[in-house]
Length: 394
Image (cartoon, rainbow, N blue to C red; front, side):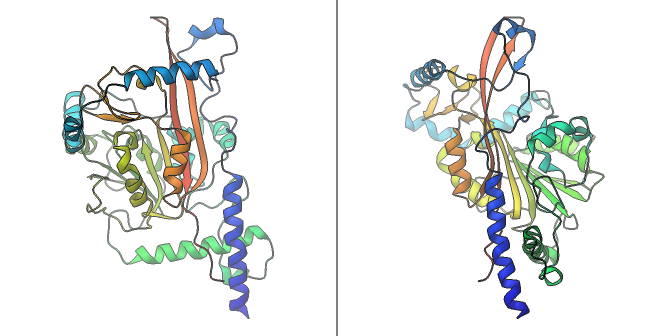
């Protein structure tokens, strides 16, 4: 009888979890994420370097579409395109040899837009500064977190709570059962970070512009960060950084397009995967396989956090003819490549990998060069997708 009740509770819980995740799906944009500096008076445009939540008119979209059509009408010959795929590692390695760690700035904004990078209850240096901003975002909790706004509560033991009819406790029971299964699966494995209760992977970490803001925020928590890049030079720069600490971080060389390459941790062992301006560098025909493969390493309830270039970003429209490899996919002068996503493409990419939408935003801004009086329309995609819990036995 108890077994039958437990199965019934688990079944209700699984339905409740899927429903609660859909409620948090981004049909509309949250009020605070992606900035709050709104341009209301056109005369003020040169008072700041960036304006948020910029609305495009139909005319703006048509002008952008025409520019993209013009710069992609002459494509690189097919017999020359292969080198940009096979030599991608060498191109990025040369990039980091040239620029070292001086090209990109550290991403201090990470914890404002992606508070899921910290286990629940942990308050990092960056998160303390903008607590109100995080609360407005109302993110789902990370895989091993205890409680957040919106009704996800600390997980409980199904054998102790099967008499409680509160639907939130049904959810707790189901999530706790799955969490224990995940932990049991990796308990006997030996790998870096195996004893951490919260594990993050950043793919395409470069020289650590996300790594070190994360490391400096998780070192007082029971968390561990893995970071990889296919550039050996980039990984060496990460390891040589004074803040690199192998007790909380493991940096390694890895090509996420190589399905035969192994990760230093088992499947279903990660709470969060972070991909910031990395998937755009991969040929669009290979993207689905990459996301499918990475998603297998997420725990049930884990999150995939994504930020990258959006369709008709200023950087797409400034390409000259002859730099286009395929539709919306270009090569830069240094041999590195970039793809420009739409919101629908992002959704399809992660949904086909078995993940469920939590947030999927198009971030449109005006970037201003006040000295030269130049205005640039920037478009970025920002998304969060979760790995659902498996259906319970019926």
